[in-house]
Amino acid sequence: MMLLSPRIRAALLAAAATALVAAGAPAPGPLGIGDPLFPHLGNPGYDVVSYDIAFDYSGDNSRPLNAVTKIDALATADLRRINLDHTRGKVGSVLVGGETAQFTVQGEDLVVTPPKPVRKGMPIALVVRHTSDPGGDEDKGGWIRTGDGLVMANQADAAHRVFPCNDHPADKARFTFRITAPKGTTAVANGLAAGKRTTARGTTWTYRTAHPMATELAQVAIGKSTVVRRQGPHGLPIRDVVPTADRAKVEPWLEKTPDHVAWMEDKVGRYPFETYGVLLAGARTGFALETQTLSLFERDLFTTEGVPRWYVESVMVHELAHQWFGNSVSPRTWSDLWLNEGHASWYEALFTEERAGRSLEERMKEAYRSSDGWRASGGPPAAPEPAAPGRQLSLFRPIVYDGSALVLYALRQEIGGSAFDRLERAWVQRYADGNATTEDFTRLASWTAGRDLSGFFRGWLYGAKTPPMPGHADWRSAPPADGDETAPSDGGA
Ligand SMILES: [Zn+2]
Image (tube, rainbow, N blue to C red; front, top):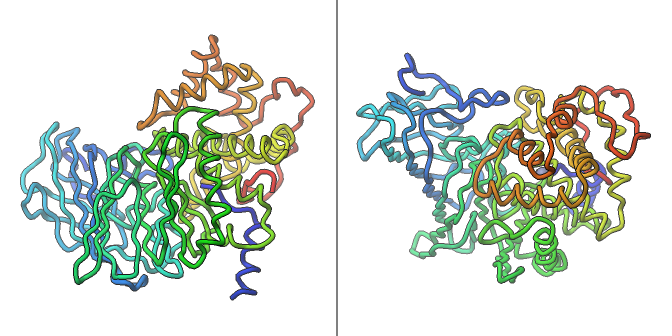
């Protein structure tokens, strides 16, 4: 995710104005997968293998969609109840292994009692008939209503506002989406198209992911859109989804993606997925989001006069970098978020230096100045404080953006550019399609550098104060200022 800078957000707004359970649990209750920052997110006792989700869109984006979510999972414990994360939609029925199952709603958990207890190692086949409601508190994520349809923004904990799931990146799975929408509407989702069938009711579009994906990265875009295709490096299919009316206007931006992919591949190795592209949504989100294989952006970022070109490209490269860092290699817990945002900010800054001449060192020196304040207000990079109640996006603080890119800068200063590059390549290769922890990163860094870096990382990742910058003994961090916790981090804007 990248929060847009206040100045850019103001410019977009101004322009728009002028334009116009688990085993043996005694009672059903909400459970969690064990994330310190999100105690009720995810669920123990099973591992989802695949989701197959059908949405029926009426053409009116304020009305709930009828949906069927099929989940294939493996039990990792004996289960008398199966907890799924789910809220906002109404559940009509639940089948387990083809038989009707009882269910209750506890907090934001759908608690299912299978007809027969599930034994560890057994497959579980769940079918949930439910609605998926795009109305109300959009700032909490899930469906986002656009001028002509819907898109999704589920990070960090909002996928279960759209469909029942094990809503935690620790449980990645394959996804199939089947979206039925009326004539004149286009539906696109993560992965590649796997069929399209038109009947009197409309068209059903099927998409399937070739790689495992976290629920927070799901994307289903429905609207009056055009799909623009081109080729990226080594034949990679690039597929952009743009409002049909803006197609010509945004082409100068769309045509940059193959070069962005080539640039990232030169830094860290092959693009990790089967396709990529940008999704431009006619909605005011205030952020861009790295939904897997199809990153989400505010259309106005690309159509508003006066937004600096380097800034637009830096947002594009940030979300692209996440496809490696955060998507292919997913965090084990949300405390590992610095690995996502630190790396995305790092490549965003590096690209901006190489292509727009904006100094990385100056940006890092500036981040160093703020770093003690960021640590004081939200915790150090790898031990962030929980988000403010009801405001999960407040987890996306400056310390995990430039505050964590600064950790990578310090690491490069410490071990040298060549070892740093080898580490980055090894990281995305070794943990591709999986999950990794902060400890996995520090261990691989020590191994790559050929020496124990645990003392170095202890200070940089967990210290209340920012350690001295290797090679820049003169850099100073200003004393913490009040009230900068919500300051967005867009680096050079
Ligand atoms: Zn990001």
